[in-house]
Amino acid sequence: MKKLLLSASVICLSVGLSAQTYFSEDFNSAPEPAFPAGFTTEDLDGDGNEWETTSGWGTYDPFTTAGIIASSRSWNGAALTPDNFMTFGPIDLTSASGTVVLQWNCGSMQAGWYEEEYSVYIGTASSSTGLIPTGAIHNEILSAPEIMFNRSVDISAHIGSSVYIGFRHHNTVDMNMIGVDDIVVKTLSPADIELTSISTPTVATTGAMASITGVVTNTGGNPITAFDLTWDDGSGPQTENITASIASGATYNFTHGTQLSVASSIEYALSICATVPSDGDASNNCLNHSVSGLAFTPSKHVVIEEGTGTWCGWCPRGAVAMDALINDASRPNFIGIAVHNGDPMTVSAYDAGVDLSGYPGMNVNRKLLGEGVSTTAMENLYDQEVVVPTIANVSVTGTYDGTGAISIDVSANFATQVSSEYRLAAVLVENGVTGTSSGYNQANYYAGGGSGAMGGYESLPDPVPAAQMVYDHVGRVLYGGYTGQAGSITVPTTASSTQSYNFTGTVGSFNASNLSVVGMLINSTTGEIMNANEGPLGFVGIPENDVVEFFNVYPNPATTNATLAFDLNTSSIANINIVNAMGQTIYNQSVAGSNSLQGVTINTANMANGMYFVNLTVEGKVVTKKLSINK
Image 1 (cartoon, rainbow, N blue to C red):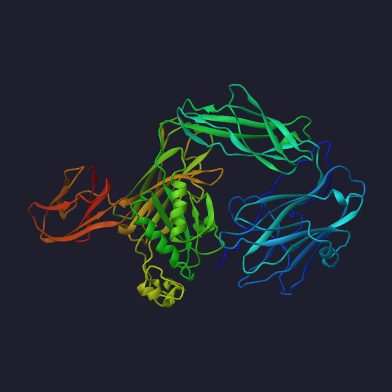
Image 2 (image 1 turned 120 degrees about the vertical axis):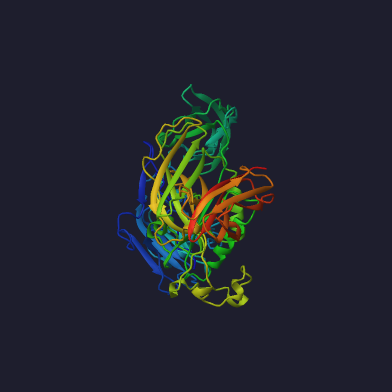
């Protein structure tokens, strides 16, 4: 199933005193799928699909604030070959002067299905039959997915006329969907520079120098040969006159000659401005940006939430990819959570929060959204994100008292001062999930091998019967909600300070032995997971019981060997189970126990450094000890 996702962020096209706007449309004034007054659509290929207005595209960055957009499909459950025409006007340019431009935003879909082609026409005719013969004033095949492209075309040649403009989606087969938004016809101010974006890192090691970098756009009618770039962190402005040749509508990547000295583990609040003489619109000259100095370098973890469902025939690909990364020792900070949709394992709030429009799909740290799923894609995106600096370490401890109660402590140890809102959250994750109803049958398009090898699924039927399926990494419960617990972090924080929050719940119908907990630190403004960690649900806090009189693990920490010593008050079989920090069972042995002290030696030489939980189960009763490996 292909994703149905695309929109374009609204760009505020502010008009200065010397500019005039003749037409502006963001499509938010009419209920979808209707168009505002003045628009007509034509289905030139006769397939029943036309331009329409639509919203509900989800939270896919950077398409988060578009509202309603105009869209046309090249896939709608099956391949389409669209020739769809959208016309609007008349636009009165009879008294216009100066440089008149047509501007719009456009974008397309995810990797693999984004190469939508479209053309733009202008003339005095009000339909495709009169506009197409005039020739396109713009044609392109979109070159990247999930990116909002800002386009501008000089239409000054049409001053003195009343014109119509047409957008044609054509010459495309079996992609997905194109979106167009924020169409404006206006006179450009002769001089106007926009500070479009800042690329300066948001965190830096204390003692480092941070370069002030970004992009400016010439939104005026005349070329720019030089501009002033100023930044100020509150200690005084740093101004540089930058010589550049920037044509109307072109962009320029800048670097200020003076760097920010990140001397302390505080948050540096920067105001950055670009200006030119006689600027026609001062409202687009400045952006704010912050750089946080780090007292230490946190260990970055990468959370991949993979959308899946038992109804989804391509979704075994996601399960195979998650297992590959979990077992990849070269990527130790991977955290995988399967978020189910439309099957018995669905958690409605989680499914709605992840907000995928196609399956399998995945969100990476809730920053890279709606990505295509494969082992290679997960590896590449993990490698990309794990090196991005962050502001805090996260730790999580989950405990189960044996009566059904769960207690989860999530902590953030901040490496810098933070003044904006962050939240803590937790997710309960279960491995080894099975079921007997037909809802646990897994659709499997890899059956028979025609679609290639897929971790053994090519040798299984379609669907795979529930009796043969075991589902791992299943997201079961959200603690703090999808966006995190409001008020769980008190700001401003100070560098090296730690804040914690306790979540409580119950095991319910889940298998406590197969549960782990994921703790998260979430930026409440962007929704991004800044850092996370995962730990097992430990059976701690359970007192020595009437079966187990004594249980200890030593040496602790251990290096090459650890001894498990225990004494029972009866003769019974004792099961020894060791679980690592990922919730995986790495050791399991059953021994005959008695009412005399016994010892079992465990080889720990091949165990990675870290915390483990050693569970001793006798007659259904469990006692747990923590074991630290430190070689």
